[in-house]
Picture 1 (cartoon, one colour):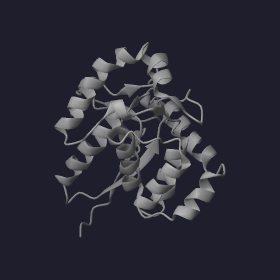
Picture 2 (cartoon, rainbow, N blue to C red):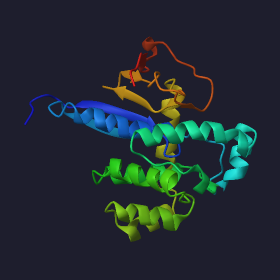
Picture 3 (tube, rainbow, N blue to C red):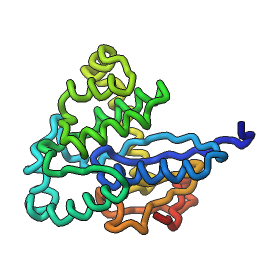
Picture 4 (tube, rainbow, N blue to C red):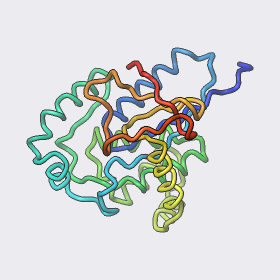
Length: 227
């Protein structure tokens, strides 16, 4: 048993961000290389598409709004699919029929954290979306995903039907934005040093133009990352 104090690692990401899907796999592999270094991982929310309504929209409508057309996304998707395959992951963009608002997904991850299952919950939701084309706007899909990782299905169904932790999750996402995080995944070490995997191609998914405050503001300091 190591006597080292665990290093806190906050990972800011969204479940519908393909580079977050890949980044989760990469950081978990990296942590396996240093088993003697205790790391305490916390998954933090980010809304890549905060304009998508709670009920979600069709994938065609989403791709047209964001990329101009469905065809315009195909070239981008091909590169991401190839990158996922290199990591042993599967991404089937053609199976995705509905673009979700992810606040309920982040609520599930938050609730799973209390059971020590946040990483498992995050992984299950990402697999459903990227691998299976699952509809993350469907409460039945979300409840089953929660049950798959060991959460109580009836309890989750009741909580999803309320606004429990909507304000909390939204505030956490807003806090990340206010600290200058505009691209994901972002890895924040010791609540102080923020690392973007800048060497990846293409770069991390961005919601808008980054505004990076100075370190004197109390916000995380960006540093050069390695893939």
